[in-house]
View 1 (cartoon, rainbow, N blue to C red):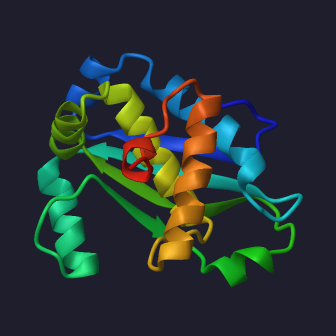
View 2 (view 1 turned 30 degrees about the vertical axis):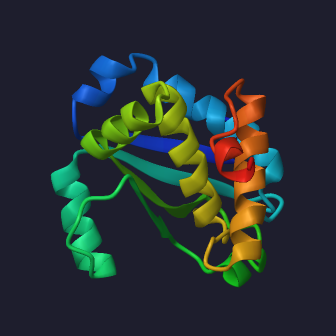
Length: 172
């Protein structure tokens, strides 16, 4: 990630299958951040860090049980450091501010990509962008919020040259 970017990535590859499946993983994630950045309403002058852990189902299941009370693996977990209103009020602190953590489960992401007929990289980038949006306060609890988030994800993915993952759901 270039030093001028307001968001730095700290990528931990806890499951080596990620690197074997996607050799230029860090570059792909950095590109997704660069394309997503203009859509994020981040306080000017702040530098942020996003921690990304590319894990397996076991690790994600443990985190999901501990922090969400759901004893099951899932594709992606996001742990924001701030509530959206707190993030908006941040002044320009010295140093780097942790924006939050994103954890992805290899088996679940791979299986879901195959089930959906999508390349693993495309599905990973979709879930990573989804996680980034959660870190800055987007959510999909209500129908209107979900539509707003899905449209933004689709627009960001289009700029990455990827198809709209929600297109089939929206078409009758």
